[in-house]
Image (cartoon, rainbow, N blue to C red):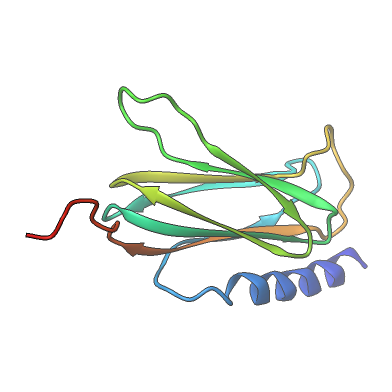
Amino acid sequence: MVLEREVHNYRELDRLLKAVPGPVLLFEEGPLDGPVRGFGTTAEVPVPGQYTFTAACVGASGARVAIGQEHPGAPFQPVELTLDCPRATTHVMELQQGYVFAHLVLPSPGDTPWTGAVGGIRVTGGAPAPSTGASP
């Protein structure tokens, strides 16, 4: 049954994503197949610093995640990561105060049947960026 497979896939996804230590800025999970084929989410970044993005998918052969921020006057350049299911992929990114987004999708076009495939993203951290100047 698809629902039983989906429940199992969410358990495995939780195991992959919750293994990442640190304070959580964003945590979102959802289905990857069916008519919607993915999901997106945003979170407010309270302090600038380095954040670790961890994304994973279970029950599909792979997925893509786009993550980034928009800044006035700067070109919009999200980072795209390819996910190899069922493994977690991590990426450290410097974020500024404001909003960050993450969008997970299956790479294949068109509607797909419900299979129980799920994906998720967890953003942790918030440590201030290392200083690049010399000490006084």
